[in-house]
Length: 124
Image (cartoon, rainbow, N blue to C red; front, side, top):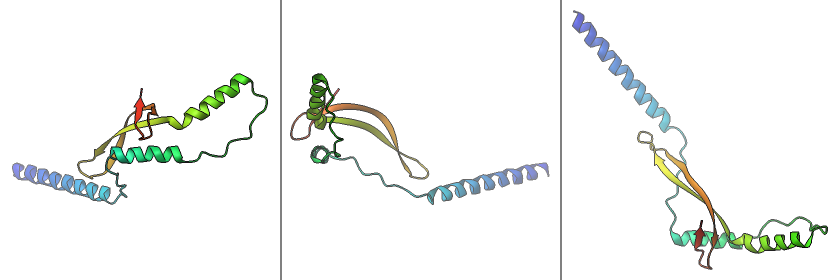
């Protein structure tokens, strides 16, 4: 008699845990999903760099006249070089086994500069 009670108690726990698991999976699958684009090719990266180079910048603020010659030289140098500076972010993509949701995980950041007209970037 005692072994039958233990068997039914174990069976009840298995059914409850299974129902809870299935309810959790069904609840998670109703969340909105954001599809992640596939990794871009070098050609599309070069196009992106060219587009960023050609994008006009915001309207500059009114020029100050009380700047020293050294400050004006620094500003001119920055204006000439700023279009070639690149900010680089790398990420890994992880897919959840049960829900199939895709999550981007930041791996690193850095900087570099555009080397040529094809959009090749040299990083540090």
